[in-house]
Every structure is written in structure tokens, then in C-alpha cells.
Length: 283
Image (cartoon, rainbow, N blue to C red; front, side, top):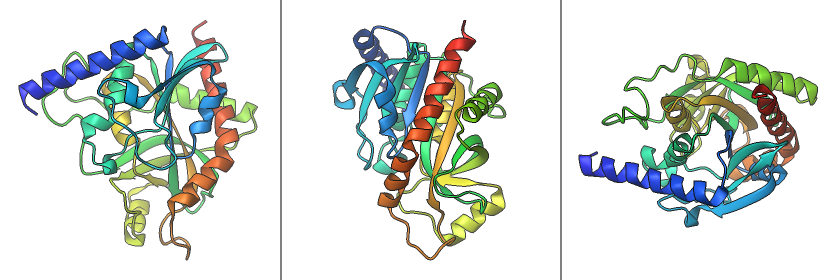
């Protein structure tokens, strides 16, 4: 990336941040990214301000099925939040900097907590479709990193440490909320491939050997940038199906959307409970 491109990218982030801040009118304590088929979580937000991505300067548009492509800002149990109804994916043809553009905006806006959700394939034999899993760590096999190129030192360090990328206190908090809400919540390691083709059975066997429990095509670039900007991170994955080769059935995206629809109520209760508890933390 040339110096001119770096300057332009920063300017675009600043313009988008100024636009959403002006239209929303408050700084969200948490940003929640809603994965495939999970956009209904945004319906729990009170006094919503809805902004389609196409209205935000320089904000890339979602093209994946199950992603509405809009920001919804408001309150969950009195806590200011902003939700992305639809994320951006590397396989859509965007660069790593483009798919993490929203995270830069949230960080520049002053958002403290980055809460990602996603749909995944279950790699571990102990995981069933419909299971909710806390992401405790990840493996990046996407072949790219959003921090590649010259570093923006005021955004974060050149070599951000990823040892504690997933906030331990937030994970414990999520497990406490899950227990209170009678939501079964497990822990696992997420492995990310670039997509958009589903993984082969051989790739899933490799992922299992590497220690992965879940597989998907998103989230990891967002986590890296959120960590770079010093945000606290929590991620929850919903197992949509068994990964390739674990059953005789072929994989389809409709299967993902159907399972996410069935999990939406449990995930909504978990997200609302965690965000409400974040408000208690600050009191």
C-alpha cells in the first residue's frame, strides 16, 4: 500500500466514523457483529437508529445471503450498543483492509467491547448442530492478515500480541449469563479458511489434527484488528452443521441459515444478557 493509499484509507475511516457518530448521537459501549442468519438479534435493540451500509461513506456492502447489510444502534437493557446486521467476507472479493473497515470505525468511535458472532461447521465430534460455542482461540488459514503493510502506530502496535486476544473475563461473564439463561455454552478453537467453497473432508481432518473445533470463513480478520486497536473481544459461534466428511450429506448455505434461525432465540438471550452485565460492570 502506497503512502497515498494509506492516507486515503485513514481519511475514509475518519469520514465514516464521523458520519455514524453524528447520526447515532452516542458512543456504543459494545459493537456486536451478527453472522449468517443471526440478524434477528438486532430486533432486541431498543430505540434503534438504522443506517444501511450504502449510506455510510466508504463502507463496503454485504453481498452474502443472510446478511441484511445495515447498522442498528440503540440500547440493550440500558447499555448503548451498535450491531452489524451482516458482515463482510474476504471471499466477496474485498481486501483484508476493506472487510475490517467497520472494526476500525468502531475503534475510532471509542467502542470498548467487540462482540462477534458467526455460523460455523462443527469439526469436533462432540459438537452438534445448534450448539453455541465460545471461541477461546483461533487458527488463521485464510492466507492473509489485515495488518499486512505499514503500521499505523496510533491505531496499535506493529506486532500486537494475540495470546489473550479473547478476553478471559468476558468469556467467564458469558458463561455465567448462559448458566442463568439455561443456554448450553461450550468452548472451542475456531479455524478460518478463505472460502467461498466449503472445506474438503481432507482439510477438515487436517483442521482436527491442528486442534480446531469449529470451521468458518470469517471473524478472524475482525478479531486481529479489534485486538490491534485495544478493544476487549468476545466471540460466540453457532454450529450450523457437521463439517465436510463427517456425514454423507453435502453442505449447503441454506442449511446454515436454517440452523441459525433455530438458534436465534438462545443467542439473543445470551447477547442481551452479556451486554446487560457489561452495563453492571461499569457501575
